[in-house]
Image (cartoon, rainbow, N blue to C red; front, side, top):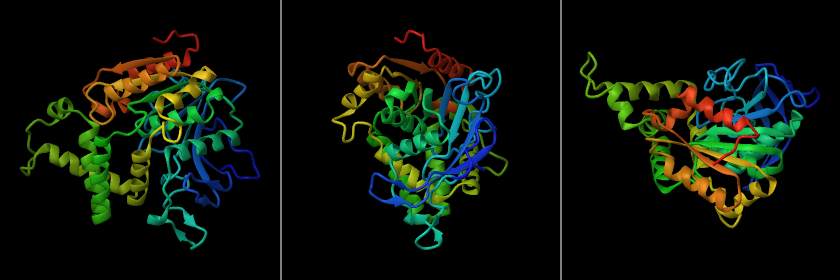
Length: 350
C-alpha cells in the first residue's frame, strides 16, 4: 500500500491506497486525512497515455477486475499494453476511500450517518489529488457512466487543460427532477428501515436501471416454483446482494451527491461552465443509451448541445440496447467503439 512516505504504486493491477492529507469539502467541512483506494493497470505517465475510469453509484476502484473487466487489459478496448488505466473509489464510498465507514478522529468511531455531504465537484477534486500523488499530470480520456459520468465532467472542468477528451456515459449536465424523485423515495426507505430499506431502495433502483424490453424478455409473466413472480424474486435477490456488500450510509451519501450534481452551479449555467473545456481544446463525447429512463438520450443530447454552443468540439453517440441505463456495464463491443474514438486524438467528432 502507498503511504505518505513511500511513492504510491503504479501499474500493479492491484488495489492500493494512499493518504493525501487534509481535504476541505465545498461545504466547508475539512476531512482530517483523506485516504483514496485505487487501482492502476498498464504503463505509467511518460510511457503511455493515461485513462481515468470513474465508477457508478455502488462501484469500486476495481474497474479492471470487476465492473469493466471486459474493456480493460491487454488487447482490449483500453489496452493496458498501450495505455495506463486508473480507477479510484469515490469520496464517500465504502471500498477503501474515506467515507461513512471511516473513523472520525473527533469521536474515534465510524462517521456513519454523520459523514458530511459531498458533491461531484468534491469527488472530482479528490481524483486530482490522487492523480497528483501518482504524478499523472495529463489524461487522454476521463470517462464513466451515471454518477461516474457526472464526476468525469467535473474532472474535466477542474483542470480542462490537462484533459484531452471527456466521455460522460448516461449522465446529464445536471440531475433532473424525475431522477431526484426516485432518489427521494430510496432515501426515505433507508431512513425509515435501515438495511431493509437499502434492499428496497436497490429494488426500486433496478427498475430504473433496466428497460421494459429487458424485463419483458427476461421475466415476462413467469412464476417461480413457489408461485412468486420471477421479476419479484429477481428484485429480492438484487436487494439482498447489495445489503451483503454495501452500506446504507454510503448509499445515502452517494445518492445525495447525485441529487446535487449540476455543472452550471456557481458557474453562470451549463453552457458558461463548459466554455472552460472549449478554451482548453478539451473534446467531449456524450454517450446516450436508448431505453434509458434515468438519464436518457434527451438529457445527454442536451449536454452535447450546450457543449457545442459553448464552442466545445463535441459529439453525441447513442448506444442502441434493450438493457436500458445499465448498458454501459453490459454492451462491451459498442462501448469499445466509443472508447477507441475517444482515444484517437485525430478523430473528427461530429
